[in-house]
Length: 324
Image (cartoon, rainbow, N blue to C red):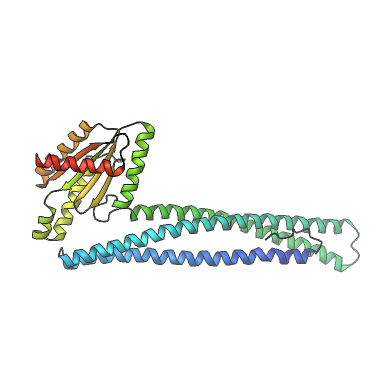
């Protein structure tokens, strides 16, 4: 909706009334943002409560199957809460930017209003002030102009605050997405997010013309550990293997937990032979240090490979290597 400028023939009083319309709109905006912020706080608390519930079940009940199921459900709940929160934070950031633009526009209108009042006062002052009423009118015009400038400065300061808060919202949303995409137990990327990131790695490799190697990792004996020692011991085995994988991977290599005891590692800019050597060394060290073993299969990205074909070939290589 377009508002008449402050120089309307309707006079200063009506111009001030029309400036009050966006004031009310901004007040409504602030109420909306306040409600959004409260919702975000509630969602953050929900995710924190789910995390705490998972920790409590492990602490109170150890690694029995019921506790493991409840722990997994609590962690899944925390992930869902963070996914919802990240989307809401992004929306809130967009709204803050819109509100900031509105405040900037209103501050310009207030400045223009102040200039008009100053001009009116100057024009009156330049003539003969016939009576006390004229003098009071000049003083009133100057006072309204001064007040409008103060409000304009306040609007600009609040617009800056809105933009800064929008930046913080986006940063927190990115953090929420990172947490939601991370497997709570191992710290690897979750399957859905990880496979999306693998697609991006494949596109990058083809665009830049470099190699990409997949290592398909299966943790040997996890079911036996779960059955004989409990799920807490099985979880610890998965964490141990993940730590060893990370030690033998670069920071920018992709590590995805595909599910259960299976992981996928995607390594750009290395040869198949280099990757085999690296992971065979890992297997030997893991066996010597931890008494645990993993099976690993490899594939190199070929022309026309889909992500599924790339992964399946590494899985098939794992089975072939396991058979000897």
